[in-house]
Image (tube, rainbow, N blue to C red; front, side, top):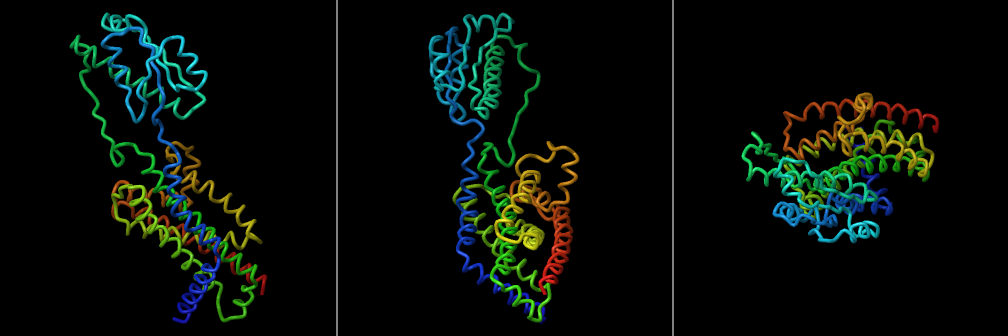
Amino acid sequence: MKKLANIFNLGIKEFRSLGRDYAMLILIAWAFTLGVYSSATGVPETLHHAPIAIVDEDQSQLSTRIINAFQPPYFRIPEMIGHAEMDRGMDVGLYTFTLDIPPDFQRDVLAGRQPAIQVNVDATQTGQAFSGAGYIQNIVGTEVREFVSRYRAEAAMPAELAVRMEFNPNLTQAWFGAVMEVINQITMLSIILTGAALIREREHGTVEHLLVMPLTAFEIMMAKVWSMGTVVLVAAAISLQLVVRGWLDVPISGSVGLFLLGAALHLFATTSMGIFLGTVARSMPQLGLLVILTLMPLQILSGGTTPRESMPELVQNIMLAAPTTHFVSLAQAILYRGADLSIVWPQLLAIVGIGAAFFAGALWRFRRTIGQMA
């Protein structure tokens, strides 16, 4: 009981110390509010109101169908132009896409020929250029098939694909970005806060005060882990409710309580990492550099930015040793697909095992560090 009391009282001390660190408080507030919002909405959708112009040399029913198929929000209402305006509009950046529908296009299509529509793309905007060309190809192909099927029954496909988007029907980027940013902020702030707490003790000379008290390294470390973990967990819960659900209007399918349980276990691992980095760094600038080197692979290779399946198999296997890999998988399953405990328990066990290993390593390093200071 005495050890628990010591851990609790030391944690309260950490809360008071953090309350006087206004820079850290501002960082926490920004990260879970404007940080989440800006990351979710700052990156535009893959294709959004792309400017397009069309040269219609056919003036047929089919060409009119194709023109009318380009609608917001993916494209702007097409601007009808002539040949002379096509190159100039691309040169000055008025249009991202221009289409040239050739003469007799409808007649050639109905005759079974394969006429070509010229598509010019402004590739300086690589994101829209790559995806937009695919959108245009699908739109034109769909309109041509539907038009031909009205005149030749044999042209109709024997089977059609009925595509339904699950969990994000409109493919809204903000739905994915908001939740992933909350996960990233949980990882980042838990490492920074615990590492900074240890650096702050060393810079203020209070580590020596703790060493002369009847306290063990385990008690000192556990106090920092539970206190800083609690701060991040509470901030994440508030952000999930007020910013993600309220401000951004992102639907949450699963249990928020189960997600927070996974987040608490994840924080056990990441706060231990922060303690370890705090024993390696000798100052806050050094800690900042170490955090950058640690966070970049954790966030990029954990599956939150790109699917793990698209990574080399060696990288996938290495990242299984990182708690973020299992936490991202768990969070996506719960918050997006409504998974329950019977589905995510392997990820929870993996996080517990990795967290225990990280905690043991950080405790060994922390004991060695304070042993050298004694």
